[in-house]
Amino acid sequence: MIIAVDFDGTIVKHRYPQIGEEIPFAIDTLKLIQSELRHTLILWTVREGDLLQEAVDFCRNRGLEFYAVNKNNPEDNDFGGPRKLMADMFIDDRNFGGLPDWGFVYNVLKDNPSMVLSNDIFHNIQAPKREKKKGWLW
Image (cartoon, rainbow, N blue to C red):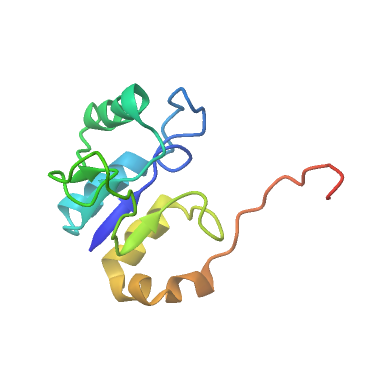
């Protein structure tokens, strides 16, 4: 399975343009998804240029290497092509329902990957509780 993984808010806490603190178990879980479950990981982020390189280096220094970064294949041209990825799954904190616990992600991929491909996974996920904002729309 090809899995696209966001960086800010998914692997690290949001501190863009700085790199935030690593979200507990994110990198260790992604390394297990690669080594044990044999899935292909692509880093999928809005970061570009030096900010992108910082994110790649952050992961690399912790032993996490991606198959490709912001493209489907490492040999794809960086210029002129769309950045739409063709992945089977996207792990992103902005998903509907938010980012589930990393242990949950690993166990679903390990025990029932067909559930992910059929989108049945979303029937059992509770959206995380968010602090209610105060403003004219709330």
